[in-house]
Length: 117
Image (cartoon, rainbow, N blue to C red; front, side, top):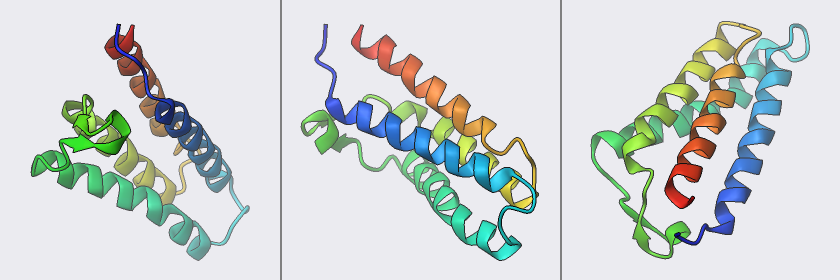
């Protein structure tokens, strides 16, 4: 069995906080339209950066895997799709904008278990 990295737990916790933020952003009349756009930009940036890394096959090794090969590289396209879909749902005022991010956490956790257990 491979040794899991503690950074995975940190990553999941950050993503859970992001889901909560998007859940709050999805509620009507909580924030102004411009504030929703500004707060949703990191989600757009993450989605686009994963898409670029996937398309151009970038960042295949990383510190988070002790300078080894990043095992989730083939799944970056799914992360990208989930984040870009969430961004679109935020800016179209859908109350379900957090759902793609929950799916992303589920995918990440499932792949982690598959990789390490």
